[in-house]
Structures are given as C-alpha cells and as structure tokens.
Amino acid sequence: MADEQILRQLRERIASFATSHIGRDAAEDLAQEVLLVIHEKYPAISEPAELLPLAFQIMRFKMQAWRRKTIRRGEYEAVDVAEMPLPDHRPDPAMLAEREETKERLARALQGLGERCRELFRLKLQGRSFQEIQSRMGANSINTIYTWDARCRKQLMEAMGGRWEREQ
Image (cartoon, rainbow, N blue to C red; front, side, top):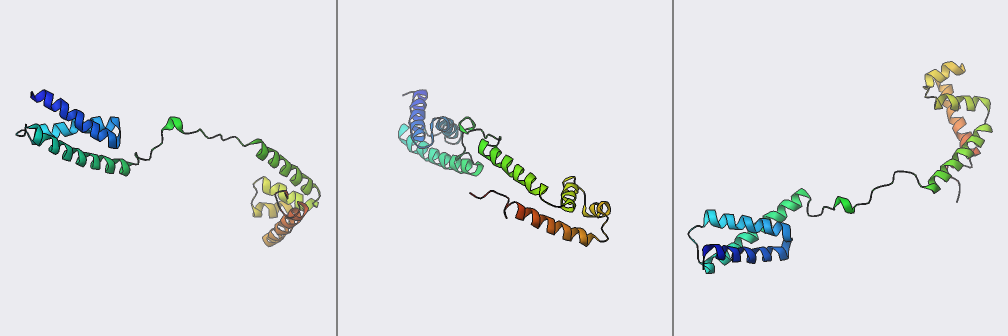
C-alpha cells in the first residue's frame, strides 16, 4: 500500500472514532493534528499494524485535552445565541395596570392628608434635602422635620390601607 493511501485510511478511522465521541467538526481537526504528530514525531513508523494503535492513543490524548480546554473555556455548555430568546423589557399589561391603580390610590391618599404632610412630600419628591425642607417649612430643628416625616409616612400608609400593594 502506498503511504498516502495508508494515511487516508488511518485518518478516516481515527476521525470516525473521534466523531462518535466529540462531534464532527472537532473530530476532523483533531484527526489532522494526530496525523501531524505522527508525521513529525514518528517518521520511522510506517507499518499500519504499528500506526493504528499509536494513532488511537494520540487521538485519546488529543480528545482529553480538547475536553479540558472546552470545559475550562465554558464552550462545552455554551448555548447557541440564535436559540436564546430575546428578553422583552417592556412591562406586561398586568404590571402596568397594577402600577396605575397604585398611583391612583396614592393620589387619593395624599389628598386626604393635611397640608403640612402634602408640602413635605412635595418637597421630598422634588429631591430636596432635609436641611432645605427645614428652611422652607420654617422648622426650628431638623429633628422636627424627621418627626414630621415619620408621622406623615405613617398617616400615608394608614390611608393606603396599611400596605402599598392592594390586598388580593
């Protein structure tokens, strides 16, 4: 047999062996690498009886190295991007309706509060600090503002039924 034909048959055998274990694309690449190793490191071996076990042993080592590399890189568990569903960042209609109901309940509850609490919440929603709120509302101490804030939040929570979400 000619050397070229022996190498062709050897390549087919080791490629089919590797394909059954790791898949077609990687198997073809590894079979080519095995033939390069045999050509470079073992030029003296030319008998098919000696080449076949040597090629299979080299292929086993190559497959183990390939598996370690794919696991290390995370390629083994990778999911094809085309198969992944795209997330929908828009809120669902139920969430929008619930948010709208909560806003309406909050507006009604705020209308039922006193003038001082409404003014305090208005300033807080504008992003004012407690020091700025103190000067705008004319309080003597910042602790007074803290107390008003705690009382107003408690009144608002009670006006909303004791919780932000509506009871089911």
